[in-house]
Amino acid sequence: MPPVPEHRDDGASTNITHPVMEDHQHVDVDNNPLMVNPSFLEPDETEVVVVGSRANTKGVQEEDALLENGSQSTESEDPNNEPSCEAVVPLKETSFSIGLQVLFPFLLAGFGTVAAGMVLDIVQHWDVFTNVTEVFILVPALLGLKGNLEMTLASRLSTAANIGQMETAKEKWSMIVGNMALIQVQATVVGFLASIAAVIFGWIPDGHFLMEHAVLLCASSVSTAFIASLILGLVMIGVIIGSKKLGINPDNVATPIAASLGDLVTLALLSGISWGLYKEMKVNVFVNLIVCLLFIALLPVWFIIARKNPATRQVLATGWEPVIIAMAISSVGGLILDKTVSDPNFAGIAVFTPVINGVGGNLVAVQASRISTYLHMMGSPGDDIGLVPRKCPSPCRTFFSSDVNSRSARVLFLLVVPGHLVFLYTINSMKGGHTTMTLIFMVFYMMAALLQVLVLLYIADWMVHWMWGRGMDPDNFSIPYLTALGDLLGTGLLALSFHVLWLIGDRDTDVGD
Image: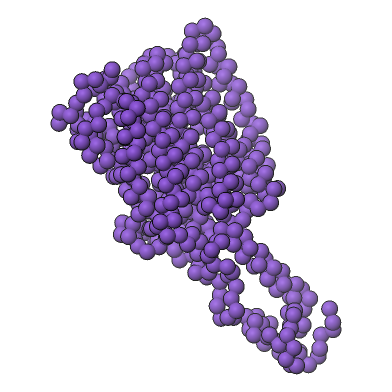
């Protein structure tokens, strides 16, 4: 670096005291452009400014991965303009573009829940479901794993992809390995706790307890959770990487696709595994215990892998509360399902439960993921970015304001009725269930579905911002609570609708056939 000219020392004090004025020094005394920082700064100070410039440029490049058609830079030619929220606002999407991107995965997810409902309608008459009715309690808890684990994984990876943390092969592998190990740990623990909840909710109130049935529930739950999370986790990784390459916002497609396969795969695995273990239990009484011990023995392996990965170390330590509480909430919904399906007058509810729960959970997961990504573009959890309301938002702000998240809430809410009409028509055309599609039934069903999604979208708006303001990453905490509430609301409102329909005389002679 050339020696510092002595004639510029007079300005050194002024410029050091007010570093922001440095931007005005575009030419030297001879009107020649200055290519480097003013040379009166010390070498260390010059290096700090240059490095800061490079870091800012790198940040802009990472943001451009998401904002392809949005803001091109946070830097400005005007030295008085500082980087602000307006310069990095993501998701410049119209209602049409949001609906177009969400529609296909939403329908795909819906048909997945329809298939899951058809499966549940069939297997509810199997020996393992009729003799060990507590398996019904496992259904919402294990189907809720798509919200507790897979949708949370999808939201976490979508945010990482959108903010440029999965650009290189090394970054991708680090994210993939760490997150897969993490969800295996969570799936095994949640599956084990779900079986305990099934025992508590199912048998203790009635005073009946059979150890062999308890071990059967444990083996079925743990193995189902582990295998389903492995399959769906790999699918989610492929969807997010593929959507990123195609220029599609992963937030719009990842969580619905997770749900499209989640319900069907999980329910099919639960039915098949529980049926097989129930049959084998009559021959070998120790088979269920061996299965439980096998999956529990693998826990330390997944734990060590997840702990060594910096991308998942914090979630491994702090991400248990929402997963476990969400499992407990879903188990309450499972208790409602168990008591309702066990009554022959309401056996028709089985085919509709995965549909209404799945649709509500899918839509609110998309909204929560979008709001979380929106906030992450502004800063880190806990930062005061001026967008976090200090109290519960009004419904008008949630659904009728001009910001992009309100616009997406309106689009998602408007998908409820046409989506459910398509799914009900599919169920009816396939002659599924035990309920005739009367007009009054469809009215009550739509009222339950609309109320469920309306409440979920409002809670999502409040919950994501509330968690953000308290330094909690919404990607890890919000979706488990929201999908679990969706299961509870959906099952409860649907059961209430069936009871009201029964009381007013809208009954079927073929119920339970």
